[in-house]
Length: 312
Image (cartoon, rainbow, N blue to C red; front, side, top):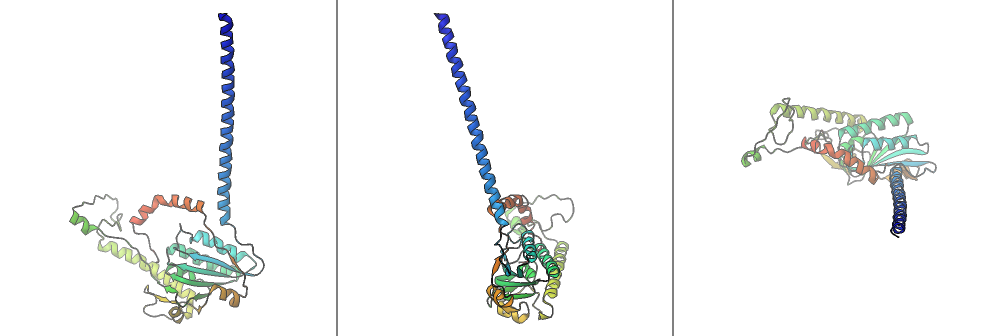
């Protein structure tokens, strides 16, 4: 009897082990299956988000091409040269686009990004022989105006804010506050000017002069672009390039703009193609997250230096 009992127990253990292993393999297969399904769903969702940016309304014959420039003009913003220049190329290359309209509502931003957009705009105009119109809404200042002067004509609302032709670098100085608080700045550099614009260190005269000369050069570049774009229409005064800004009605009188008008007026009466197709790149959630993650690494250092030549 003990031998029989031992044999039964052995078979029971073997059967239990076999079923246990079978159940484990089945669980593992289902777990892998569900993981693959989640990966496929996530992949499809990400693909959909990225694909959305590249979709524009399908052209249906002659139309007015619209590109929106909103918010700060910056490499990491929606109004970046990379995105806007791609949109410009799409608009100019479309045979149905009778003209291109830039609808602008921006306080300015990077002179580099504005310069890249202006250069590409001029290149495409010469290549495709299409007219470009800028429509300034609430705000078309500084780097935004730098872009606008690349258009053949500039339209504004009578209450728009236009101008601010200037350059700035902004920072803070805490040296006196540190002295009062008894805080010692311990900064070690290799290079006499490596700590240039450090907010916790004094700004020597020679460094201040260097930075001033630098932004003066960028200012002169800005002025040259405005003069080239506006030509004889611009009524130069002592204040026109001082960084002041004006309302739309004054801007027209000064030659900073040409007419009072809107997108609808341009499409209907100037281009004579009332259908408006929006070519503006739409930055989706996934891309914003990727850009912010990549930009976060260096953003603190850039802010500590106070930026480099901002037009705003």
